[in-house]
Image (cartoon, rainbow, N blue to C red; front, side, top):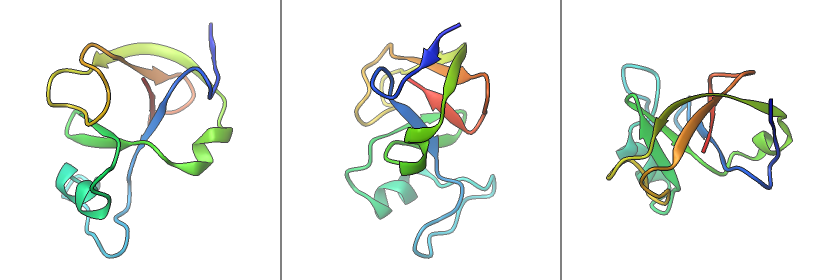
Length: 99
């Protein structure tokens, strides 16, 4: 079991609620277009019709343990991550992913 440390992984979290009046889609999540409208330089990736982004301040203090690999970044899925980067679900939460 590995304890995930902030300096070793990039933790991403999807936006649950629209910011500044942006409305989420029918699943309750923002679309890539909505994320980019709010922040054109957003570091994001898409998985299972959900958009995950970096830069969520409170995540820095969350201790997570690596769980199962649930996917990998493919061409066109991410703004900054390399193709082939593994996507890992932590054991403690399902609203945060580790890459």
